[in-house]
Length: 102
Image 1: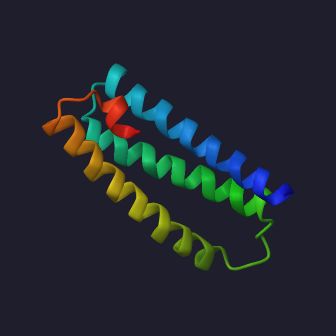
Image 2: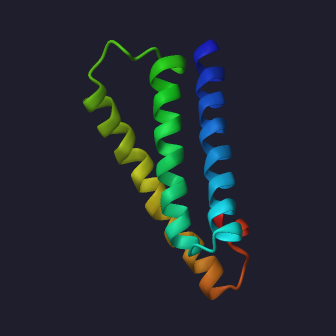
């Protein structure tokens, strides 16, 4: 149970950072919402990986390269799918990027 709660906490930290950075990049710095989603997704990826590795799963003893590769495959697929769905919702349905990100 402890690992599950920590994993959820690290995911929440990554998602919070991702949405906050997306909003900052688009609203304040006027970066394209898709470019901002990619940058924010990568930032969230690194935060969630670091927290999961060091805190949730105590994976410091394993190969960091192998672990980051596995994490990158899963999260990279999620970022790609999320960006596609975001583009469809914003460009074709006219929804705000914040709703499209969800």
